[in-house]
Length: 132
Length: 141
Image 1 (cartoon, rainbow over the protein chains, first blue to last red):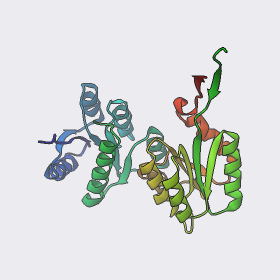
Image 2 (cartoon, each protein chain N blue to C red; image 1 turned 30 degrees about the horizontal axis):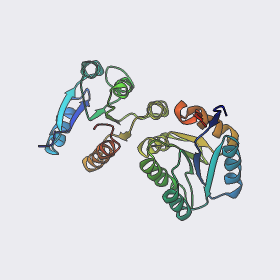
Image 3 (cartoon, chains in turn brown, yellow; image 1 turned 180 degrees about the horizontal axis):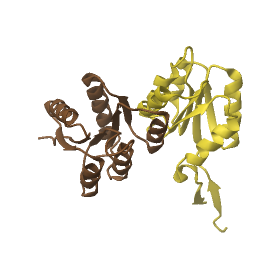
Image 4 (cartoon, one colour; image 1 turned 90 degrees about the vertical axis):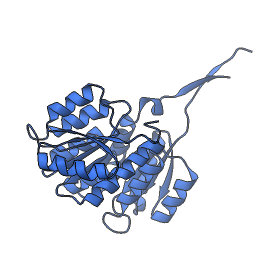
């Protein structure tokens, strides 16, 4: 039986986390959630092995989600890193580009768009052998 | 006869896609100076043909081939086909938030202002290429 893909979803709004968890679990993903950057960094530091990390930007402070993205980029094998934010700016978008983030989108976003991007990026990661 | 070591550098390929011949010429010249074999294309059909015929290390695409923004999907295709390549977009306008997000979502590594001299753009790309890509290899003959 194929292994379920594991996702780390980070957002300080519990309603967003709950919604994303429901949507992603329905799609067959194994979802771990974190309500803060600190909690997410703890999970990543403690050997959290995720296929994708989906993070908000503004949590404990403005743009702190970039720290989650940076930490995720250091994990081997590198997970897909997605940022979903309601507060995109030139500065945080430029920083995300320089970090090599795989996907960045505005809130609110359509579920179909998010899922399509996630499926595509995970398939690309699988095919490029980053995971296997 | 004693063996002699000859430094050889694997051929590095670059693709430049831009509708203006003057811009293409500038980039081709700058890339050639840096040791790249450069393929140029003025439109999508030629670019797609080149993608099927070569393996590119660098791709530089105009964000506007026929109309504004239509270069982005081509940049995305280049990233998918050549995941290790440095794919950059040349934009006639200053990037805004949406442009930066397009770059991220299409897998583009950098956006360059079209007014920037070709030599500066190419130097910036070469500086960012992985050392392994730019380092020469030696072999004993």
